[in-house]
Image (cartoon, rainbow, N blue to C red; front, side):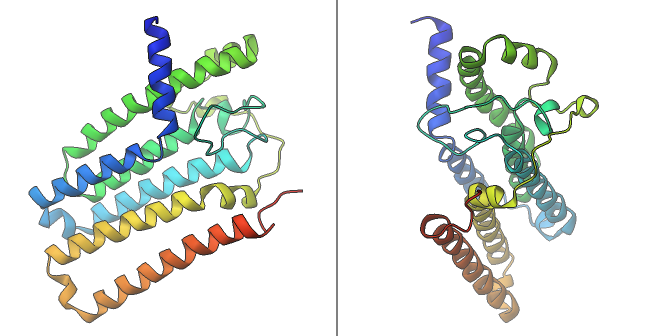
Length: 244
């Protein structure tokens, strides 16, 4: 097997488990918070605002890509690459992989949330390298699927850093239903991450001794559960998110 085939195989394996592997990064970050408690940073609201801002920005980037995607593209398929059309307008006219850009932005937001400054560049390097392997496999698939049309678009469109001046409008209407159907699980995961990190920080800072904090975390937990299972029910058991 050639080196290129090995890279593509590895990229496809990472693609298949791209929803689980970031959890390992999160567990590492959580463990590091035990060994490197950054009390001053946890008490500094600027860290929280920056972290939440990056997380929201990451999800917004994904929403822009998913909400105007062509059918059977930009999805959460796990077993194999799927693409019935080439997305090349809207956000895809500025960057080739906006979904992965959104993911990286979100994950860096959570790295900031830990308050461990050196963890941010380390995670940035690791996530870029991780997604670069997935991208390699994906682009091999797209090259075989769309040939010269894909190669021409790839040549003029940046990989992960958007070129805003290259924007070309996407005539397809934005569908919030498609966004909700595909992105609710990611939103629930981010809310759960926020819950765990905030709970740990508050516990270490002895803030859980305050009744207001206890009520806040109980309310947050209930909201996450209701949101996650409610959205799952609507997706699996109803036609609320179906687009005619």
